[in-house]
Image (cartoon, rainbow, N blue to C red; front, side, top):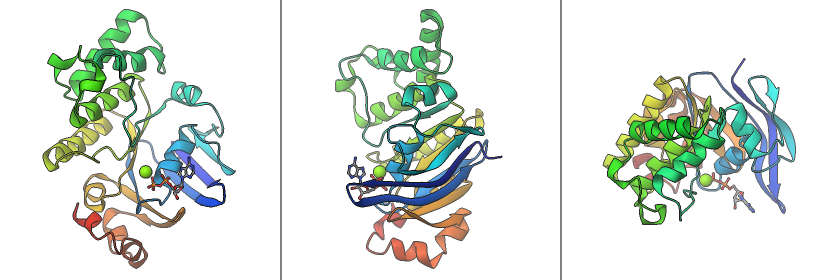
Length: 245
Ligand code: ADP
Ligand code: MG
């Protein structure tokens, strides 16, 4: 049984179909890449799984349990955490305080001291510059924000981590580091569903890939299978840069 099962999920926004009958499963311990051109429905699917949107149809099962339509905080307590394509933080809090929020409200909502330890451990794990812990988040650069977001997500002790365009806005070296970090997170025992629209990045890190186009799943398989699929290549025509990254 997959850890996460998306069964026939559909979602429209005032007539625009963002997801049409999408099916996918994420096996425990794998990195599943979810890829597709801009507007394909990737972020919408992350929003449905994490409880931000209720789907119009279909179900989401986590560890065999129906979580469809549950509020985000309950889904987080069950063990699913996500990051946002446009980094969402508490800009007036410090870097450390932002990660503390994750540690205090996550799966094993802990005592203050435990939470502090957990927050520091995760900030160290993601390579956040420890000299910047007391900096207000509005003063951080993109690279620091992405690390912070990752540390806050990990502080909730997820079993499944949903990553929405983690490498977008990073330079090539930072992207490479982020990919290394994603592998390290998986190796620590966390299952990963990773959205990325740059093919080259997702190819190198995913065990399997699912491709969305106009809200529909058009391909699924190993990176090699998916990259040579004519429907996938066609869906990316005009976005050739996405293969190059
Ligand atoms: P992706 O993340 O693959 O680029 P999205 O899931 O963000 O795609 O968007 C899929 C489609 O749904 C797009 O046409 C987008 O404009 C639309 N959409 C997404 N969220 C909303 C929303 N909150 N309101 C209206 N339309 C939306
Ligand atoms: Mg998106």
